[in-house]
Length: 56
Image (cartoon, rainbow, N blue to C red; front, top):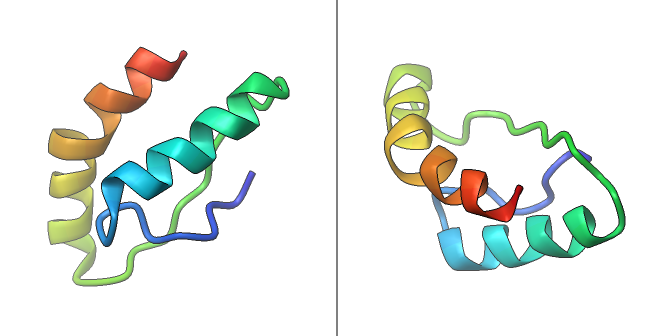
């Protein structure tokens, strides 16, 4: 799945979308930076990945 919402813009909306896809069996999510790539990667690791792990 290619995420349609930037994950750092609205994390709760992004996770809700990912959760819906996970319920359908999707197990991979692709995102692209919407800001400086280093900042994006750091925040993705700090804020998004821990919560994605809870989804499965």
